[in-house]
Image 1 (tube, one colour):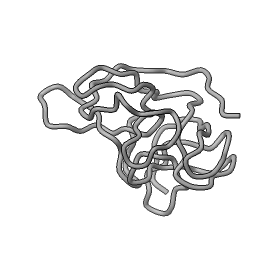
Image 2 (cartoon, rainbow, N blue to C red):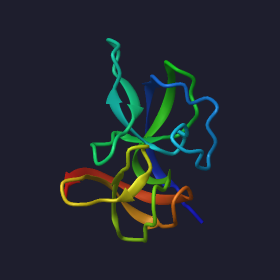
Image 3 (cartoon, rainbow, N blue to C red):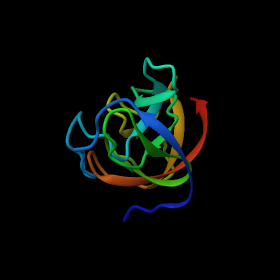
Image 4 (cartoon, rainbow, N blue to C red):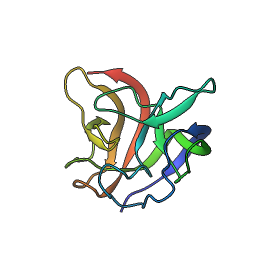
Length: 133
């Protein structure tokens, strides 16, 4: 069972329409419970889905329409969509779709697995200060 707790959330503008996403994996179009990263081309700082091994800002916690505000989890124990098999204690980073995967050398670690699982399941991670393996 995935857990959440002691979360710190901030509100950010999400530039991609994620309003039809579901909590469980739906391939590359699902945004809910995925890593997001600063990006976009507007004058206002915005968030987009994180790419593989990059510095994730946090985990998206809703399904916003394009250019809508949404909560992003930046600290605490967060649910997240998994991009592969992960087990408790492993360092994780983002895959190309913003899902949590085991971090490799040169990847930016953004969490430690609390509750593992397999691809497209919801697990839990402890969001930590980013560092490079």
